[in-house]
Image (cartoon, rainbow, N blue to C red):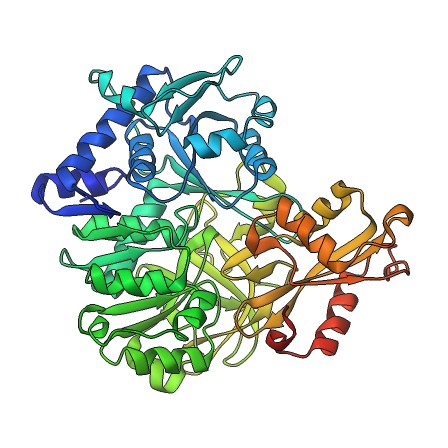
Amino acid sequence: MATLVHHLVEETAQHKPYHIALKYRETTISYKQLHTEILFFANKVVDLSLIAGDRIGIYAEKRVETVVAMLGTSKAGCVFVPINPLLKPDQVAFILDNCSISLLVTTLDRLSTLLNILHQCKDLKHIIVMADVSPEIKFQGIKLTLWSELKNVTFKKYPKIIDQDIAAILYTSGSTGKPKGVILSHRNIVAGAISVSEYLELNESDRLLAVLPLSFDYGMNQLTTMFLVGGCVVLMNHLFPKDIITLLDKEKITGLAGVPPLWIQLVQLQWQDSITEHLRFITNSGGHMPKETLASLRNLLPRTKPYLMYGLTEAFRSTYLPPSEIETRQDSMGKAIPNAEILVVRPDGTPCRPEEPGELVHRGVHVALGYWNNPEKTAERFKPCPMQNKCLPITELAVWSGDIVKKDKDGYLYYVGRNDETIKTSGYRVSPSEIEEMFYSSKLVVEVVAFGVPHSTLGHAIYVIVKLTENNSNLSETTLKLECQKRLPAYMVPHFIEITKDNLLRNSNGKIDRKTLSTSRKNQIGDDSAGALK
């Protein structure tokens, strides 16, 4: 039974060596080949004198080498840090520095965008480039290795690690400040794969189309669940939703995971009738799927089972709604996934009554180890379990999600809202402060506030109010949006930018009153801002 992340491939390679593990474009790779490539990478990591626990950043699109780097890092006893390929250089630099990355794995194209920020990453000593030809670039104090050189290293002795050791750090935005690195153990990741594969009834004949970023726990789980059961993952970096439908048919895909904005786009397109004959299931997380979208999907895919899920990076996946309950409970988040307990509690930790809103608290093996290099935020989110077993001599920690939910008399959960200011848009959690910092660093504004307003397709649309500097008082909303597009990934670019000549409203503490401003704009736009998007 797999206990470490790389065991998921290692054990399957022993029993099903010639089963296809990955397909990327026209390249297929068996479990035996994948395991061999993982060993090559792990050997090189040890050869570079990295030790157990060292962090390895992986900044690349979905491709075979990206997966090899993640699993090879695990085999070498190090910690993989997948970095969303949509992030801009300054955001990548923050992660590299905050996480004390020793080795960066990336592509030639992405490396060229990082040239001006690498000097900020004081712990970075090595770069492995996914290329066979050396770039004409010199880095002071950083050794460059080509991907083609990995096979030149002989077998190395790997350090001893156990399932409680750190396997990965996934960066996620919070309500304030910079992104937080969620620390996941081998046990967290493997347990998550086991739980999800159980309720999705995954098997070795499944073929899953991976369209979500591998830097998301939801995206990463597409790999781990398939590798656990010996299925195939088809990697895709899609540009247009229609390409997804084309590949679903071409590759005879049996499972597809998505977020609400993607499903909303997909239902507007023409689907081949043959897809429903092999697409066994679809899953949704990262936000509530609109009723109309779900109805359209069920009409397009009458033989396909829809699984509605809820999760957070700090506890992987928390709940799912069985397809059999869709007819009567399609607004529900469902119940706890296997091997987890979900509690709904008041601020004092006492349990809520049925239909009484309270905070969702997740306890069990999926609870992460905290936030990297951030003890204050860790203490806020990872707190004693409210249903503490008094017989235990040590305190059990649970993750307090910050999400407000309610439970009906039958135990099914329903999402109510959040108790913080995080913007959840297009399946991403976005920090208002990170957007505000971008505006301030542009030196175009005197004051700025960012928040989310409800939106039927995005979950939340990003709304920004700015007061321009005197020298830039003639700038337009279009100009400001273009500046955002240069400096922010697409999902963080504001959908609404309001320019005001007045000072922004402040509360009694002298701080910009984000809550009042967001409420007033929500009321102006209405609960559905879809029609107002430009």
